[in-house]
Length: 403
Image (cartoon, rainbow, N blue to C red; front, side):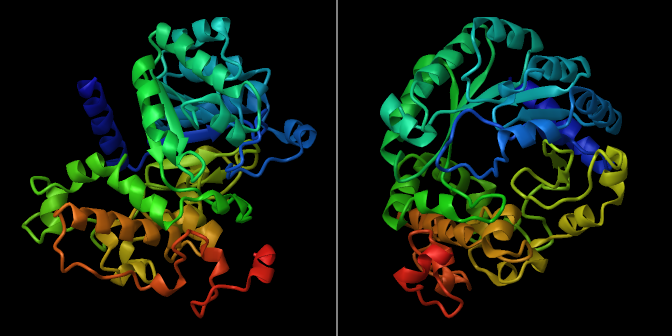
């Protein structure tokens, strides 16, 4: 398995050197039979969305363009992919064109027959969201009775057929205490698992989901507990990252001339209506595949060129921040929450401080490292940054509904 990942990394590096795209995330529908409370997607009216979605023929034509461009990795996602009646046909067409395939699904529609079909595609993995170790909390999130059992049953079906499964969970106040149980459940099933501590605003910049974020105390618990081992492994004294943090000879982490992420560099996203975005988390239209070819957008989009040019040095406030080493900034979060992708993501600032503080508590960062981001007067400890005015004062409660 390690050898396969190494080969994939080499192919990706070669493609980047040659100026070719490596990874595409293709959202084939934004319709979904769940109503997850934290969802960042803007779901259109089901009838309108179905009418305007790319057709089967259009999707297959785009697959041909992606293959010609040299795309290696293709992720198919929704909404829920299988609400499309042609979902199996779409997946089969992707497989026929030789993409290394990933699938994101709730698992709701993965019955035995479909599990048999998916096994024939030999996907790299199927990722499914599991929000709790038991049904009660999971179904508080999905707002769909029976969804926990269907997801777990789908995972079992796929694993029995040797299809790799990753159970994923965004971590919120409502499910923080479920993390250890979710990890154990995944181990018992034979699946991998992944936890994401950041909840983002919606694509249309509506901030509602951010109310579900972990507060300050919970974020500290998360990095001290479930993520503690990862931090020690990443920033340990014997690692390049740890040496850089401690002031050793290793290259600086996140140097100013580097880009914070691969959006638009190696990867792109396509939405259900043919719009091309730099990333599925960065809703910045760069062209439409009903009007232009993929190659024309990849090589000629001014919006993509702008994203590719984003370096730490060009990001206001980030370029002078002493906590950049600990930061996992996202262009998309900066855009949909602060309204400017060329500046900081306040939620990333909050997490960077929490990471640094936990590393300091573990003795992996000098006790003298007490700097704060230049944005700190606008960062809300509970993650509700949109409720903090530009003067650093929290907005009156009566006005919060207007955020």
